[in-house]
Length: 299
Ligand code: HEM
Image (cartoon, rainbow, N blue to C red; front, side):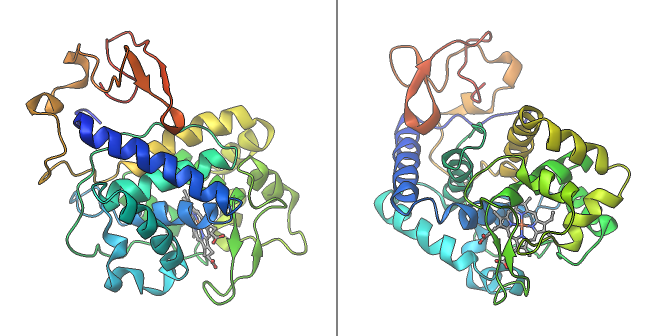
């Protein structure tokens, strides 16, 4: 993002409390809801259209008209999970809540920390549909993800989210987990992909397309042999995904006009919570150390 929103201190506290609550609630149910929360974050963001700037991570999947679309089957469970968090932290926007839930889901299952910038305003109507069809090929994947302004690397690395969870006959028509440990976020999706069909594990045509497409495959091979590279690139692409259609308008959660300053002009430690420390993972403060005088992710 060229311009970053600076939320005010009150809203920042709301975010940190919601993050702790999400973390705690997930751990309490043994992380079983982590896969569907990650899928929720994806399905809220996926409808972004880079050419019009419409749609994206704006909370619109909560609307019945969008939620009841067949590819969203199962997401209602994640929306319900988040509704409990929203009841306890009513000031968080749905748009922020769904993206925060996706990021916490990755973290609690062992995946990389993903930078979270709060401040998304909620949409007041459903988005148009841009959800990928699991029976598609590489052209279809490119149509869907290019429309969002994402690239080939984003397509492959984000597909690695299929380390978590699986498919259900009554939702997508497919059945089975993607990997052997569906509650562990690691590079096993890519390892399994290269291994080929395994009884009990499911691979969609869109997953297999990553192997047959000559521009996708090198990324599959890289991430299968190098989990650090996967985590690094995943954290970048997931942040991008979580900020598609980031809408700052119509909200009183922001500090003031400074929030619209250009990143490289900002010299104030926005986002510092106390004692010169920055907000960190799970709400714990981390030492403040940023060359430009700002907390990571803030300016
Ligand atoms: C590349 C195109 C993609 C397609 C075609 C696709 C399609 C699907 C389908 C059909 C399911 C099974 C739903 C069910 O039967 O319960 C699923 C599950 C899942 N998807 Fe994707 N997906 C894609 C990309 C992504 C991305 C980018 C993410 C997250 C960043 C993601 C996260 C998940 C997760 C975590 C599950 C497991 C949900 C559960 O266990 O309940 N997917 N996906």
